[in-house]
Image 1 (cartoon, rainbow, N blue to C red):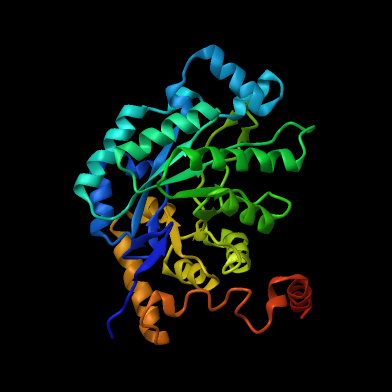
Image 2: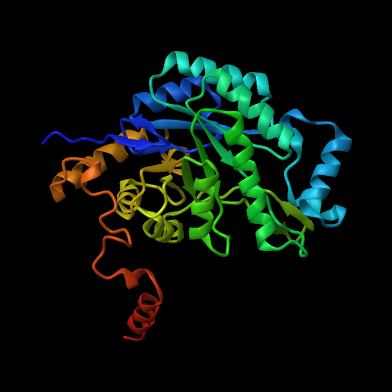
Length: 332
């Protein structure tokens, strides 16, 4: 049986639903070529941080203070800007070079701070030839006087600003901390987002209790982290006009299948490639193909969303009733 892995994301046609998420692996053109050869449907480039470009100390100090609104000691929770090595011209050149070497879509990722940053760099990214742009809003609302509505407006203003600036499709990498994720998803789609990525995994600090310092160590996601994005992918599937990308906890085809059953248009992974190497994408595709044959599905579209909330016979399984059943099961 011939299998059809094709899907659509951000309005782009992809040969596979498995997409490489934004990570430093894509800093090298050779890796991007290898990702295409291993079967990736698309590659999201590592994020271009506005801090990489605007290094003036006085400006950075004011931006960071405005972002955190905490005492100066709070700045230790964020990585030094010197840790980011790639500037805007190198980033744009990588987009150009990748578009010349590979046929799969190249999606840039932008992490801005100021309105000028979102406008200027989004325009440059489009001019460099990127097929799409992922907006990565790494914003921690540490101001205890700021309410949820103000945080939501910040995201919506960014999307509207970028949408007015570029014509290429836009994806927004969401965090799971909004009080009403469904409404926020609808609002972002209305503001011009073509796709939503569930979820942004904020890198939280740790403490060294002997050296009394803040640690910035990175931990890769694990399969047991899949449940929150799986829930919201299931709930939002078919209910928002934007495409859905699921990420977090993707270590094998098993997680890919679950996210697709929930209704995701694509599934993103990076941790698995760090652990097993870029060629592991072939293994994931082979495992996906094996499952599809076993379940008699000839295409990804044939089973996408089968277990989304709107398609299951018992939609309350996603809500409070299921919580009660889980607790009852624990007592047995």
